[in-house]
Image (cartoon, rainbow, N blue to C red; front, side):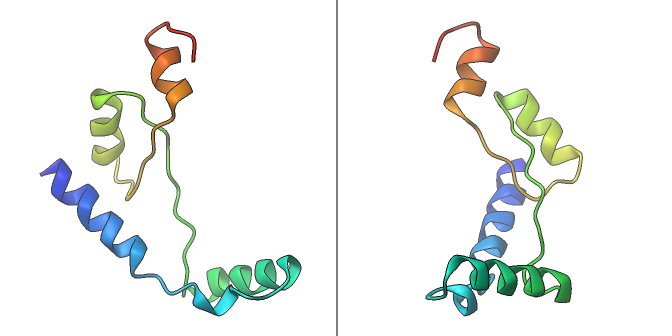
Length: 82
C-alpha cells in the first residue's frame, strides 16, 4: 500500500512538463517556473525528509505525495558520523 502510493506520486512528478523553462537564462527560467506554479501547471510539492521506515510511513500517512532521504539524516539519526 505505502509502496504503491509513493510509486504513483513519483510517476505523477515525472509527468509534469517543465520543458517550457529549459534553454533560458536563469532569471527567465525562474520567472517561467513561478508563473507555471501560479497557474497550477507545475505545482510546488512539499517533501519532508525521512530517515527511516517509521518516518517514511508517517510522511505517507500525513498525506504528503513525496519524501526524500539524505545520508546525513540517516547516519545522524542513528548516531554515526556521515
